[in-house]
Image (cartoon, rainbow, N blue to C red; front, side):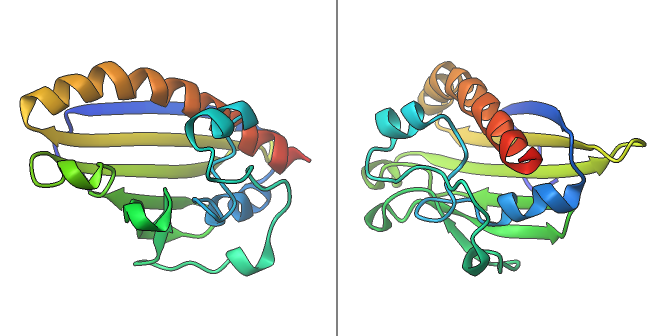
Length: 171
């Protein structure tokens, strides 16, 4: 309900052979200059060369976030990132952004974007991990461009993210 009536919604999920307690630490340390987004290293190098690789270990000093925490998603000068709007340990982490636009566009276009990372314990103790993205954009030309460009990129990056979290959580 954070982004009502979204223009676009994407859903991705994976089953992880570990309990939510093994998945959660990886989620709370996500972000630019933090634990990363657990995408493939080549993606990080090509799309985000100024950011280092995603973490391969749980980093204790990155385990403390709360509602309102700003999670960077770009170099500091871009002021791009997401705010924690919901936090239910070992169940849900929900982030929201209106800053995922180049600074020069922010007067001509608008974006309201949420990312919801949820976990459900399966009967056998494994975790069903679900990542949902919802957004509204305007004006129309930005909506068309975002749908044509962002949705395919979201598919690739979300798939990498899910497998990255799975590999780390199971390890």
